[in-house]
Amino acid sequence: MEVPLLRYEDIVGTPAPHNDHYRTAKIRNRVEQALQFKAERTNTTKPNGLLSAQEVKDICQLTRSAGELMREVYEHYQLSMRGYHKILKVSRTIADLNGHDLIEEEDIAEAIGYRLGK
Image (cartoon, rainbow, N blue to C red):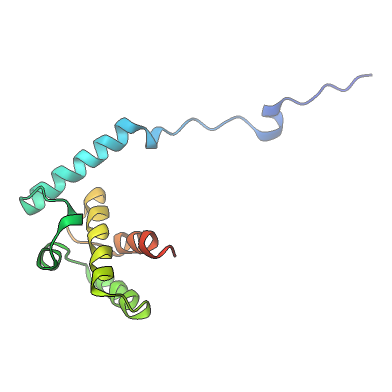
């Protein structure tokens, strides 16, 4: 008596429905929404990456918990002012994508992960 071979689906299960979260159109839409949010919040279209030191101070406002996290990271990693500003600029962009008026702790944490690879 011959034993039939198992189908691939029997071994690994049926594939999960495809999540199109990363489709180009969805990403484009999300970026456009973030740019609109930023424009309404700041009345400028200047990219966060090009903000001056004074603009970073004015635009990159943090929640209390985000400020505490940023202080810890600044002191622990002995960041330069340039490194500090880079994290804040990326955090501001992440906050815009998330629709946050103030930079929140999760925005800072994500930016730190990109910047410091931790």
